Amino acid sequence: MSFEFTKIKIEKIDSVGKIILNSPETLNIIEKETFEEINEALNHFETQNETKIILISAICGVSRAGGKIFSAGVNLKKYNEKLDMVNTSPDYFKEHLKSSRALIRRIEQFNKPVVIAVDGFVTGGFFELALACDVVLTSRSAVFSLNEVNVGLIPGYGGIHRLLRLIGKNRAFEIIATSRKINAEEAFSLGISLQIFDEDNFDIETNKFCQQLALKPQSSINLVKETIYGILSGKNVEQIEIENFIKAISSEDAEKQIKLFCNFAHTK
Image 1 (tube, one colour):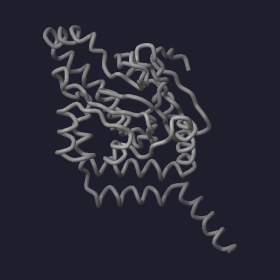
Image 2 (cartoon, helix red, strand yellow):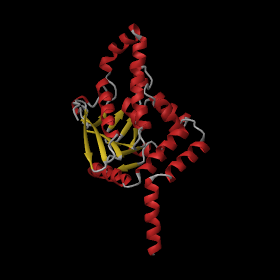
Image 3 (cartoon, helix red, strand yellow):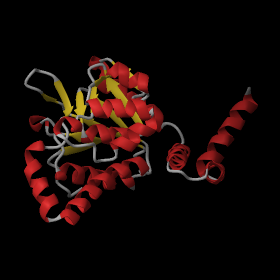
Image 4 (cartoon, one colour):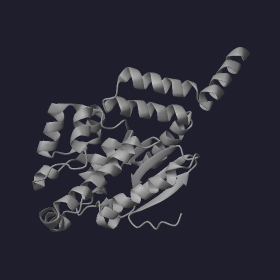
């Protein structure tokens, strides 16, 4: 592809398309270009039939204290620029914020499952992005935080409603209002993440998870995602489940897999 990436890099391993944060020297802070490049990467993988799963990961930076940083969130050093934008061009700033939210919503609605593998500390906007992914995998060193309240802000990329929906009002309020850090074990117990892997085998295990998921019939997996998102978005449960079951049973994948199953059962 001709698009030149500076904040991320992309790879493809078998059926898995990888989007990798690639600015460890700046602790993978979120710039406008970061989201633009992720969107371009999604464009690249969207129409590739051989790419069945998207995996988001990072080349981690290192904090002054020596900790591993997946992403340090937005660049607060540019706060004055954003404040000037709010004061002088509020409509433009609103559209800028909407475009960032649209990228995260696109991940939630993307036509392939999106897995994020968090190894290290992730705060702010990339925690919000993780909440929009279909599966969150972590290493034992993973730490999550929505720390916007510490600097007088609130999460702006949809993290409030997604965390609320995931863990309930009381816990969501406490985590956001106190800006406290959530380690890998607590993230797992709250249902924010699905699995915890040892750091030494993290890349191997996350790739293995994605490859195993990619073996499933793609149309079925995508319809599961579409149905779950539709229900969470308030669509009629009866209607969307019936419509998507009909889509599934009419698919080439269903015809092929049911024939294989019947042939296998017949030989037993």
